[in-house]
Amino acid sequence: MYSVQHIIETALKEDIGPGDITTNNLIGPDAEGRGIIIAKDSLVLAGLGVAKQVFEYVDSEICFDPGHKDGDILKHGDIVMEIEGRLRSLLAAERTALNFLQHLSGIATHVRSYVNVLEGKNVRLVDTRKTTPGWLILEKYAVRMGGAHNHRMGLYDGVVIKNNHITVCGGIKKAIERIRKNTSHFVKTEVEVSDMEGVREAMEAKADVVMLTHMDIGQIKKAVSLISGKIVVEVSGEITKHDLIPLADTGVDIISLESLTQLATCVNITMEINEVF
Image 1 (cartoon, rainbow, N blue to C red):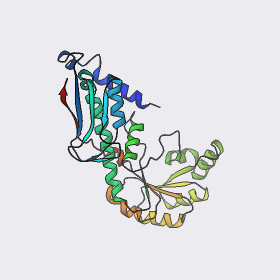
Image 2: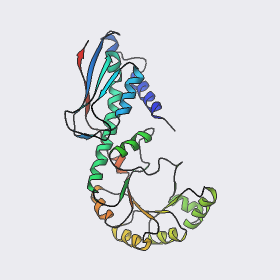
Image 3: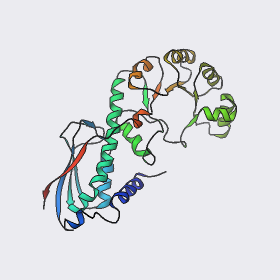
């Protein structure tokens, strides 16, 4: 699994390559200055620590004065962070640092708009594994900064028996029996179902969590009524923001949305050099 440091190294090598040909031919190696990173949109901040690591990777002597922390709500014109150091270093790291900030803050901002819709509702909003390859750990962090929760991080930390598993194993009961035989008793088992027959099979096999997928509101209400609090109920599928309140009102425990990461767009954050020494 890639670490944040690995992601940063890859991004910088991708952008800088053998050197910043523009900056290195315009600015001397000893020139120093100060800059500010500014929010140009209203946003929920995420990725501040990652941006700081980008600058530090380029030059460990850069100094920082963060004006905010991840999870804060910023408005247009707010100063995210002040930075000071060698100008070559600041400018070489600028784009990569901003890419992280803009993308992760975009996810956090998008997620917060969904979380706000569900304010006061007794339901947990979670993401999915549909993330940008290589960025999973960062995008799921941004989801948390937006106020939602993570589903499993990957295939390694949670059992979710899906339709293809069920097909291969010959049914829900057989799949659950097999997974419980081969995993620790501490591991909870979730199973994906798309009709009431699947709900009944999951209950009979004593699944810990049932994921209702691509079921309409009427079917979901029937499933919740049948389950009656005996196991945790998650609803998933092609869910939009407009579906959140009706789904929450069915009594499900969890709503999982791929759109928390898939539909988020970058916010506008910029850096300006405002003083040269």
